[in-house]
Image (cartoon, rainbow, N blue to C red; front, side, top):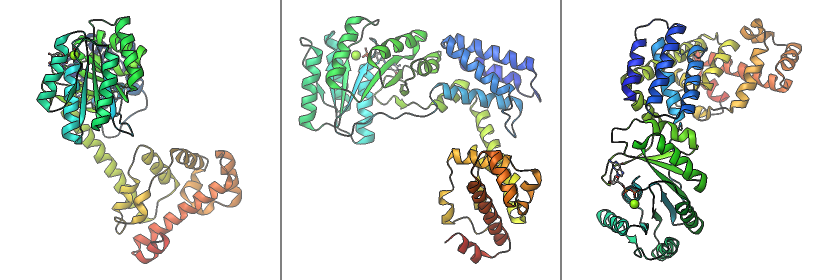
Length: 440
Ligand code: GDP
Ligand code: MG
């Protein structure tokens, strides 16, 4: 499978102190083949491989990691991003009921997933859902939903199969309103393939119900077909989210990897079995690690990176206490913060600062950060090390060089000096002075 192939590829890199251009090319070739074989869309694969090789051969070097770890880390991050980067929660309406419409091909798992979702809402959110049986093409479909409803203790609105599904939905919604249900799940019909008639029917239901969520249910076992299907449904219905079912089976994983990139719609849930409890929130990062199959290695990488950050923070804290903190360190810090670095941690390592309320809001607008960096870049080495030389004419030159107003340069230098003074007082044990300065 995909995981084994990726694992093998990564294993070959282990123990290498340095990775040659040849190694990298070979690694990328293997990753590309592994993804294609797993049925990932070829365009998605192409983009992915390009991003990974650019990062791996570029200057994106992570301190403390060996070359193989770096590549694993990059592949993991890019896999995560391919699948959406963040969890996307279920939409919720401001007024009840929140209306969820299930769509998808026949056998994809709509009815099962409607039940699983209703069950989840009921148990986790204390919700009172109603399910509407709007698949009128097979009598068994209505029975199936009724049975699911009985199993999980959720009411089902049904009118048999001799009536227009749009009408069923209309009546079902009226009942939900009367009964104050907070969620409505509409189970619709599917076909073996996308066809015009089905799409028109679904579009009519959508127009009537105005759902908050249109969940496209896709069978992950169907690989590339799943992606093509998703595109078809999305073009016609503009779905709001995707549920990937049957991920418990022997799937090649390709659908999970390309469906987000191809449709631009988030995967919200995954089905991992036939039971009513077999529905999980989709986490792109966990899925990436699972596909990569390198859990231990990734844990190690995270720990190494934390250690590096911590070491860095300690060095800075030391500098502040020794009062040798200069603009170069300041720049270094800005860069750390931009990488989600540890300025607040640094402050907390300084004795007496740990619980200071002034630290509660150490955060910065990324644009401000870029401006501050530009200002430091425009300083000479001497100016960076010894802020005392910064007279008005130097400040004007720095302002012009960085394209920032001179007032901003003044403000920054003042803040920097205050910070230094404060550090000095802390290292001299004069806590009273510091508290005064921080207005505490
Ligand atoms: P629908 O036609 O889209 O409504 O599909 P159904 O909900 O009737 O599901 C079709 C079949 O797939 C049923 O046998 C389900 O039990 C099964 N199924 C649905 N979701 C999953 C899943 O996540 N894992 C497994 N293994 N089977 C599933
Ligand atoms: Mg069904």
